[in-house]
Length: 328
Image (tube, rainbow, N blue to C red; front, top):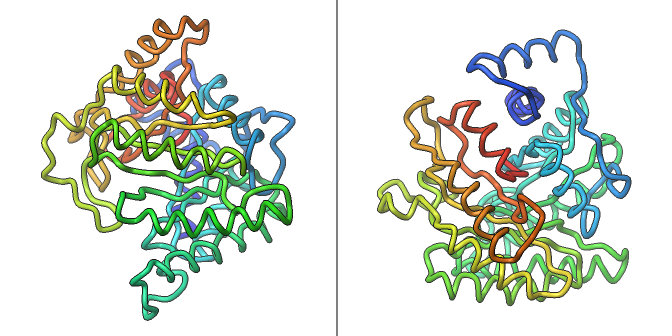
């Protein structure tokens, strides 16, 4: 696991960082160079971003810096303290920051698969335990860490409710939440219900300094027991009007911060390059649409995230990052 995470972050120094031009072998060459020189690839971090868990305004500053500087932060799904530590160790060695990401299944695994999880109690307890571990040791690694939870469909919202309760308790004691951000994946619902529920949760998140990630369309493939391999291909491509609707609705929440997991042909799973029909131009079109609608001078008003990067070429990844992707 350690070597796998290290390889991802070596790659982040190449594929996730800005460059004038990239060939298909450039990422590998840069990764090899980074290995040979042990050269760190830390981006220029905002003054508000310190080693340890990043939340609230510091998280917004970090994501906006990534968008402005043209890089995406690796988001790694973990299953225990060993993989959590591997993420932070690799981030410290090859360049940070890093997102440590908990899935509902991963949280259950941390607590112990033998436990009853009928009411998500094991998933809640395990995710909280993992988050507390990160809070205790993240600063020792000297890197900024974003504590995030992954896809949460409508039936799993009690899991998020338990985590928000834990963050509220942590906020009362420390002035900051336990978690940096949560993803609500309500893409199976109508657009109005999806964003309506997300808005309700963002109203809970904002006072605590928690960011919300929402999904539009469907990420193909399979992850954490959710199988979208046979989904209608039209649902793999989000429309700019949908992105604007979400932006407009969520912007109404005072102090709210959000990122958008738009679908542009990306899929979960392991695929050889060339087997995925990625269309990152959708992200550019969405940014332009929002900019015109709100009359903004910002060319990239939305913060996008990129799920399911396997099978994508380095060129496509770079092109997507240029459209405002801040996490991969």
